Image 1 (cartoon, each protein chain N blue to C red):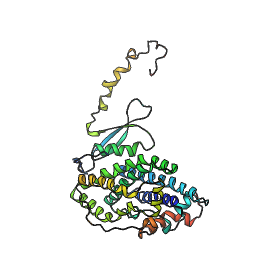
Image 2: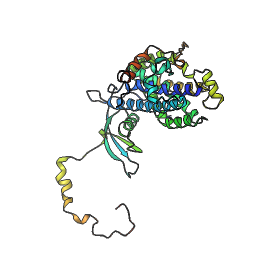
Image 3: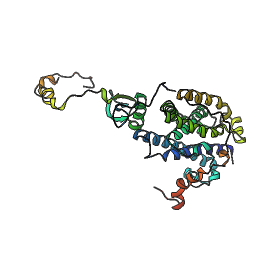
Image 4: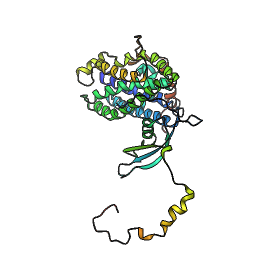
Length: 108
Length: 249
């Protein structure tokens, strides 16, 4: 049985006293990598994993779960989008489309 | 009644009544995520009940179905434990009730997997995995709440003090059990008690909850003598089939 000591009912510093928000990533049976599926609230990582199991895998969606506290995610700023992403649009040579893929190579 | 039929009803009715109790939380859970968790568990129990009551119908051989057993028996015909029919109370009461039952159910299914009756063994095997998860879920919550705030500790302690009197019945044994134990169909239930206490002690210690010292014991559910709560459960559970016989949806 899985148990941990010192599990307090943690509250974060938000004024409404809600539990921290967690981002949930699930790897499906066929999937090679974990995909973001949504978010939920939980008082700590153990509860977050169990809540994710109940909320996001009840229809056999996955065989592995990651949770990350949303606070730990640092995201790009949408106002930077032009200088971040647009320059790549004109660099067609960065796609390996000029090569012949040998027979028998999968997942390309 | 044949011992195996009687015992199958005990297993099925525990699942049915506890599943119904948990379903009462649907839409009322303390947080959205826990609401879904409790509803999932409720559905697991209703699924178990379907399997056991299907088998009861086969064993009886009177052309009744699992639905007939679930919706059209009188209260005295239900053989569930008194523990599972106790009211939900606050979240702490529900979690303590669940923990006491899950610990027992896990140990029981671990033994029933080796039952000489193939159907019982099959249902036990199918149910064991989800039961392990149920126990994990309820244990975690007992620990969180017990070792949480002053108020959550008090509520869990109160719940345990109230429900403790129904735990002796988990190991209730009579001629039905004795016969089936001889046949290798079920374990000797009294043999589970030591392991059950071990799980309870382990979790209560982590939860900083005191095990009640009272040994006032209630039993009767296994022979159809119920607390007043079962009648109210059945009123709701059976309403549709009583008001609109044979209705399907």
